[in-house]
Length: 292
Length: 292
Image 1 (tube, chains in turn green, blue):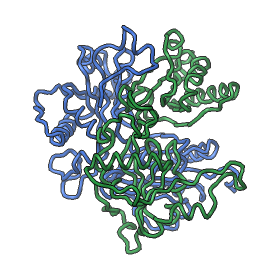
Image 2 (tube, rainbow over the protein chains, first blue to last red; image 1 turned 135 degrees about the vertical axis):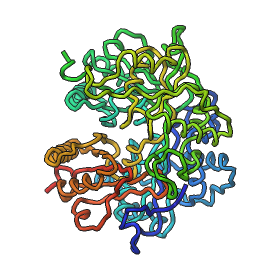
Image 3 (cartoon, chains in turn purple, orange; image 1 turned 30 degrees about the vertical axis):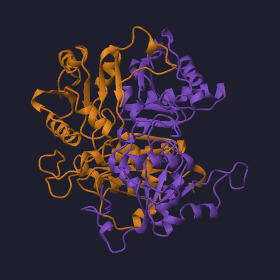
Image 4 (tube, each protein chain N blue to C red; image 1 turned 60 degrees about the horizontal axis):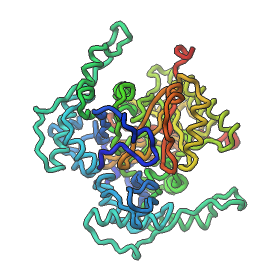
């Protein structure tokens, strides 16, 4: 994996000015967070769970880049250390975790002035390594930082400060779910979480179905694992009979799977909804012509 | 990488019926198609281009699963053979390409009755291996099949026929671009290609910007590489000054990069737009409150 930031045909990048030293490196995590592998405590933290060899889940180029990063900004320091340890084992390289500079992304402070945004001092500290000219790894708990996960603020800040941003190739459960659904993949929207309150949730599901029908666009949603059964039941109860609903459970973990059916078929089937396992839901309304 | 399709808590999947034999296996491709690596012809077909070791780009679990598949349904047979050859080299395994059953996905037939959809005979033949109980690999030219790429029809057909669909973990340039943009990653829409005709394209850009502002949703678009400069110029000319526009060029290839700026800053900058290189564009309008 090259570190180059110049490309033929990109004038600005070959100019003398160039980007500042210190790159923000977006490191994809595996998708097995919260899944476990059968004989551990299933928290995905690597603290005793039997986990797949990380080389089965991430490209070697990512693993080898991760083990040479000395500065990290992460969602959770404990699981980041477990991740780096997994990478070091896979790369056959010794990494002294205690010597690494691993900081957690400043969290939104509930009830604080400024709506919970990090303070200027917190922002300054989070990117200190970058500003000092070091490469800084950005890591969230699963998949890509900033995609349905924290991290976006720091990417935006790095761009604003003129640092190069490099993303390493890794999977996101969102695009995996779209691919596996067999639903429209030329147009799809990830809309995140729905409201928890039943009436609001129903209204939101109806709005998403209307958008899907009007734009012929797959709508992709997620929920906190323990709320998956309630979301699934609300989707099956609310959506039109000929809307297609796809559920992808624990994708990219051993045993992960995808089921796609029309809502009328979900209503007729017996299915134990995934509980306490990560899932991605995709829905696609029939075209207006076929909607009758 | 396990082949299991059962999960605790998923009643139906552990029932006696279970899915039919023959799984459709979605195999992610690398993202270096059309990029080349400096000293080849740059067509990404592996026919003389110096290419990165595929282990740097795809997880070993994907590579080792790919080399044992004997039946394939692919976008392009020639580059699929090059892909399988790359995987075999990386896995240290001999694969006799001539012995593999590699078929191209039936193409839309222009001007044919039925709007160019594959004929029933073509459909039958494409999934013949699956119906005979074999696992069938599905592969497109870059990234995930069915996501901004052909493949969706066959995934839908496999679901309809009751076969299990398994997606292997791989990157999509869409989610990489969202992550690297620093724009909203809790809500984003991939909308594919814009109209080529200037007036229609302008109207579509305005509609996307309005949707982005109303939904506070990042809009993600792509273009045929040689049209990238024209699309970029139309975006910069049409969007509001405080809308943010991000361009990701040749992501996950050596030298790939992302630049994010407000439109007013793009207007003030000199930038050679990527020509004949794959790019992903992300735009995010300022919130209505800030839009002034």
